[in-house]
Amino acid sequence: MEDSLLTPVFSLEESGDEAVEYLKAVRVQAQQLNQVPLEHPEAFAESKYLLESSIPRYSLDISESTVETICQEFSYIRNYIEHWKTPQEASERYFGTKQEWYQYMTANKPFLEYLVKFDQVTVNQLLSWCSEFQDFLNLSEWIYALLGCLELPLLPETACTLNFILVQAVKALPFSQAALIIVLVTNFFGQRVV
Image 1 (cartoon, helix red, strand yellow):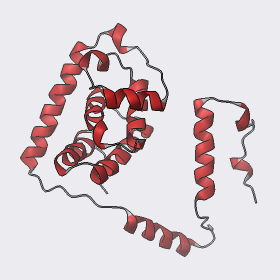
Image 2: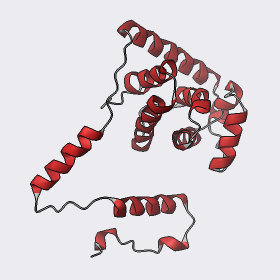
Image 3: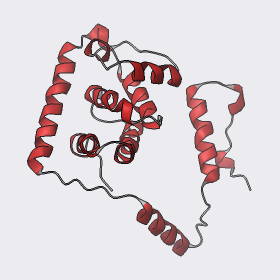
Image 4: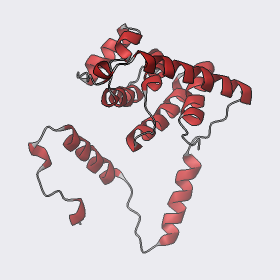
């Protein structure tokens, strides 16, 4: 039985818009989720418990002073990047496909002269793509640099991306790099470690 609330008023197949593509992806993901009937609250409680028990837990074996030092140095880097931005440069948006950016980021270092030109839409999009690329290890410098350009407060989508980056960092990076990303995502950007 199709839920009329999930049926769009317009046809999703007719548009190539990014927002429409996102809605299509959400619809596909929603259709893949197990349906839990609302009339059985105990079934919901059980599925919630199973979900929580499958979430990986992260622990850092580094001192509080090291965490503080990492956050202070990162603040300095963010201020340095902000210092070099001018209103004209800060408003530039860069377009390209996901694959074009992947090729660019794996072939080039994240130089300051380019970073200061990225607007927040570009920074958010690149972070999102970085979290999806399989070659996470080779993009760790870019992720660090893009985090340095990320403005606070975080958008909800960006917070979600940072949590995904956290999981990817733990899986793909050596401890020192993973610890750096974990400290920044949790302590600097205030995302909760589960």
